[in-house]
Image 1 (cartoon, one colour):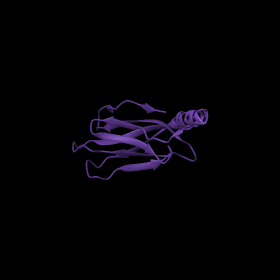
Image 2 (spheres, one colour):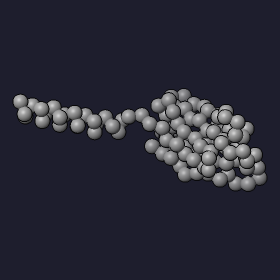
Image 3 (spheres, helix red, strand yellow):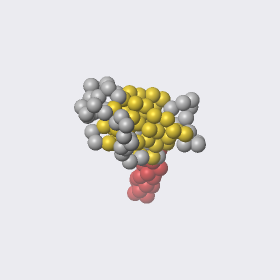
Image 4 (tube, helix red, strand yellow):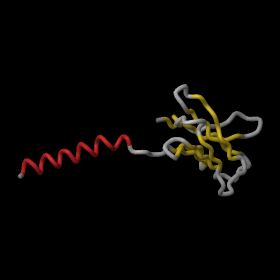
Length: 115
């Protein structure tokens, strides 16, 4: 009886450790108060401009087996509306970063967040 309880406990703990890495989770990338995150099982991405600084924001993201890049831009300031799009075809998003998009200056970006 005691051996059976121990075996069941070990089985439950093993199941938790095996299934934990496969759980879906989103990665967030920040640049100041602006951010981007992936969702819908890494098929879609959203970026939000949360700063009233007259500078838009974009999420630069990598997708697919070749790590192709694309971006989605929220250029309308802090108005509680965000921009989103899906990765082309059936590709998964592999990583992304959030960038400011000032006119006539290089884009300032947060760190890449990758799977």
